[in-house]
Image (cartoon, rainbow, N blue to C red; front, side, top):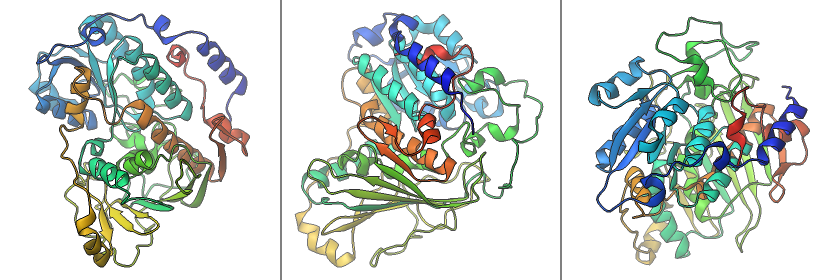
Amino acid sequence: MKLKSNSRRSFLKNSALISAASAFPTILTKASTGLKAGEKVNLACIGIGNQGANDLMKFHESGLANFVAFCDTDMGGPQTLEVLKMFPNVPRFQDFRQMFDKMGSQIEAVSIGVPDHSHFAITMMALGLGKHVFVEKPMARTFTEVELMMKAAKKHKNLATQMGNQGHSQTNYFQFKAWAEAGIIKDVTAITAHMNLGRRWHGWDTSIKNFPAKEAIPSTLDWDTWHGVVKEHDYNHDFVNGQWRCWYDFGMGTLGDWGAHIIDTAHQFLDLGLPTEVSMLKAEGHNQFFYPNDSTILFKFPERKGMPACDITWYDGVNNIPPFPEGYGDPMAPDPNIPPPKNGKAKAPRFNPGKIIYGKDLTFKGYSHGAQLYIIPEDKAKDMAGKLPDVPVSPSNHYANFLKACKGEEKTRSPFEIAGPLSQVFCLGVISQHLNTTIKFNRKTKKITNNKLANEMLLGAPPRKGWEQYYKV
């Protein structure tokens, strides 16, 4: 993998000299002046198929959103038709830049449910124009993109930001917070996190030498805009409609897809921040194009604020099952909090995705999304039964929380200052996966110190011509 260092340094240096506000002059709307009580939020939805459609419907069910624009590079594709039938009168666009140009004065907030590689540019433009932003997890595909998104959010403090790790507004969030504050969860030294679903790329040829063969571009798809900042590829159906998750060029693999639903609360309430070292312990089926079939990744976090150093060991792959401690119980028992696969290529899990948290005195098991934590083994749980604090009930789900934050009624639970470092953990993990190596990371300088190529990958390749302006903060 070769990156053009001079052009990368040049565009980043030049970008730093210009503010996002000058790149995207703020349009004064109710988003920047505050909404009145009872008003709905004028929401533009960017990405209205697949996960974007799910987000759109959740915003609709909240009763707090007024849809003013829909945008999708494959507007009219089969995955968008249900939404278009339900909301036939909402203005439609295929290019978010044209949408903002024509509808900017009517938009107060945006939801972004598009492939990972497109999160960054849309978010930066929206924040620069004074729009509240809900963006699916992970925040972006490269470490530096996430860093710039955090800086933009900090600059526009009046704007609500929220990453779409929906469990962060459910039971696990409030339970972990309450138990950590009460000292029930303390002195954590190790966490096992695992996701053992079959993935879309399982069964592919791992000796691949080239991207898949060129196919005809569907008539509904704006293939050029779909790429965003990423260099152009020949169209193939295995790049779109969720298949983008498979490729290093577009997605973040299993770690980026599920990590935010499994380790999010531990990362926040144990104040883990960024790791000092990331190591590939296993990379079955490693290649330079798509993610391994099985990955075991070790993240080392240092001592911080009186808490001991902590390791997170991540396992993914159908046959890459983590060790379960004595007293864990049945790891195959169904968990109603975990959504079923949405794609026929995704096989049912052998084991529930989840986590095991090892403290000094207690061990906890948990699943994914908003599922609650359990003390194990059972006799320890019984001993602790009368000592556990009350866990508050969530006042709003993740979507209502965002819209209420736009109205000034609540604060978002996964704002960029919290979701950003978590997303950067995934970015570091993906670099380690891609190179199949150990990287050492300086938390103060935010540089990889033992591998020049890995350090260059924090930024990634320069953006496509015409997309450089989104790197300006």
